[in-house]
Structure formats: structure tokens, C-alpha cells
Image (cartoon, rainbow over all chains, first blue to last red; front, side):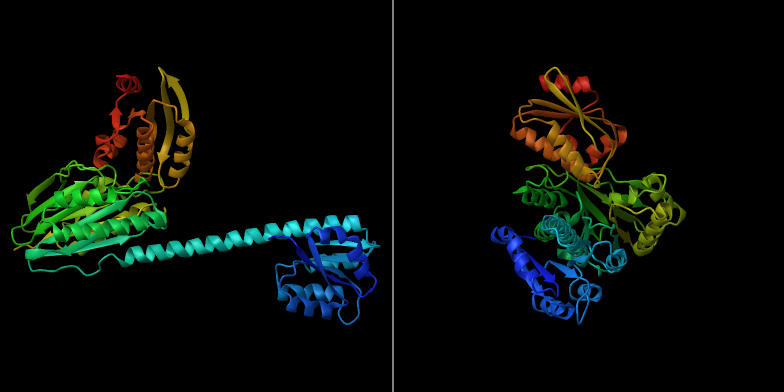
Length: 386
Length: 112
């Protein structure tokens, strides 16, 4: 809020107007205040309705047609952010108290001491400036929250909900977003020759920049995956593209795999992501070895090795983000890989959807009401029994 | 998220403690930026008292490593707990940031 501040002076005494303009002339000339005048409450409301740039009201109490105390009740209906100062007879505590109860910010007494009046006006205006700034910050926060909600919706809307299906395999993936916008994503791609591309990823940091980085990561990955065969080559190319012009220090961990549903061959490359689990039909499971690749976007020209294993009928590969294993309970314990493995040994999964639901249930039971700071994302692929 | 510093053989040792995650990563970054002067030539980040580091925390360390590289300074981290070392290994950060078992070892390595 910038000067000049517009002050509405309400008094039925006609001499006040020239007196005020004369006494405040230096401030008016300096561009600090401008004045508008009204002679009773009704006129005052007319002025307020006509001129929406009035910052404060200085009002007498006893006036014809509508008195100052009634006017005080009406002002917030026009603009709740206008501050009012009441002019009362000296020692008239009853009216002063009524005025304060009706929302007056301050009062001055008659006969007017103009030096004191000016101090009161300045204090009122400075209070109002702070008040408006606080309101505007609050509005900005609400806007920011809306923006985050939009980012979160965009993030979730690009995640696939339909997955390639076949008699030889079954695949499912799901994410439980954290309260803030996180940066997890997954993708399941139908590639040439019936091959299936599987990706799970976690972007460093949270919020809108992470969501944007995640979206470009996901697009680049999809493009490379469709154009190239080998998981290691795909990660190498995406790393190169992400690293260009990346001075934010943001990076993404990705595990990308290509599955051949006909042979059961599962080739994967790991870019700084945690190891997937292979779960056998008896419920036993083990972590797949890391392939030694660094998170993507960190440094150029990094090598991405890949590993290949063969899924036996009934095997399930479980890909996840650290939101699962680092989920925390009230005692600040981490969920950990062992608990994850126990879920599978207790109930050997026959279906990827059920397997993921069981993991979410187990993590949620463990975490209780403790809010999680990270997205929890799982992707599972099951090779059919026969 | 405070960062304390001391100097040993022309090497600046920066140290912090506790969890470094999305909630305090920015604070950690500001503290680290303030602690490291552009005239430094050797910087060691001592992670002995750090119990957990998230990807947001790794990002701060990466940014620090990159800006030190720009000013042609050497950088290393040291004294990682087993779980922090695992995070460095899984993310692959140990491939681009020197990791040492102890402070003395890190200082020796940077001198050479």
C-alpha cells in the first residue's frame, strides 16, 4: 500500500473541513494524505460505496440521520479492511467503549489536538498496511497451495492406470503420494515384439520443480525406451539428456527393465535406484544385484551396465521406491527391506495387484498415523505359472 | 540444521549432524554455502554424526561438489555410517564424490 492514503472525515460540524485541510496542508502537499468529507453516517456510506480507495474513516459520534456508532457497524459490510477512528467527547467512556466493541481501531477526543490526531492517523495507517500485507501473503500461500495441488494432480494424471496384459504375465503398479508433491513415477510400456518396458523412478527433492523434472524425465525415458532396446543404453541416453543444462543439481534415480514375456528374460539397468526384489512362488525373496549406475542427471558420460536374469514361472519381480523401505513409524523406525520380505513370505503373491495391496497395507499398519514425507510407489510383474 | 567448521592443514572441515531430508535440505544448503568461502582449496564434509540423508540432502552435497569444482577446489566426504555409505553406493554418488573412512584419510588424500 502506497501513499497518498485516502481518509474519509465524517462530522456534522461544517467548520471541520476547512480546518482539517488547513492543519494537514503540509501532509496533503507532500502527497501523504488526501481527504474526503461527509456530514453524517448516510453520506459517509455513500462516499464509501462510490470510492473504493478509501483507507480509513475518522468519524464523530453524534450526527443527524446516522450517528457514528451506527456507521461503525455498517463500514465492514462495505469493506472489512477499512480502519475507523472515532472522535468523542473527552471522558465519554461509555461511547468510546461501544465504539471499540463495534470495531473502531482507536479514538481521539475533542477538542481535536491535530498533532495527536496525526500520530493516531499514522499508527492506524501503518497497522492497516501490515494487515493488508498479511492478507496478501495469506492469499499467496493459498495460491501456492493450489499450485501444489495442481502439480500433484498433473503428476498423478500422467501415471498409467491401464497396463499391457498377456496370458504369460501380469503387471500392476501404484503410487500413494506424500502430502507434499513428491517426484516418484512409474511407467509400463508395450514395446516392439511384445516386449514390456518397466520403469520406476524417484526424483530428488519435492514440490513443483521436482514435479517438472519428473515429467521431463518420464518423457525422455519413454522416448528412449521406445527407440532403443537395451536398458543400459536407455539410461545412458536419458542421463545425457537430463544432464544438459541441469544446473539445479536435481537428479532422478531410475530402475528400467525390459521383460520378454515369452522367454521370461528380465534385463534391467539401475541408475542409482534401490534394488528390486525377486519373489519366488514359495514366498522366498532376494534383492537383485545393483548394476552400479549412478543417479541420472548428476554427471555426463556415465556408464550404465545391465544385468539379465530369467524369471521362472510363478516368479514375481517387485520394484519400489525408498518411500516403502524408509516409511517411518512413530518411534522413527524405518520399515526396511526385511518387513517387505516378510509380507511376501507370509503370503506368497500370485497376483501383482494383490502383492502391492499387501505391501501398502503392511506399510500403512507400520506407519500408523505418522505422516510420510515421501511418495510410496510399487510396481510388480508376475510371470504366469504355466 | 547447523554446520560447524574447523581448519586442519589448510583444509576446511565442515560438519553437521542428524537427519538431512526434504524438510531441512534448504537450511543445510544455506548453512553449507555460508560456511564455505570461495577462496577454499580443500573441503571435507564430515558426515560422522549424520544419521540419515535423503535424495534432497544428496542434492545439496552434489551442488556443493559442483560449485567447489568450479572454483577448482578439492572436495571429499568422510566418516560415513554404514547406512549413509549404502545410500552413497546405491545412488552411485561414490563414483563422483570421494568417500573416505576417516577425516585424516580424507585430508591426506586431498593434499596429494
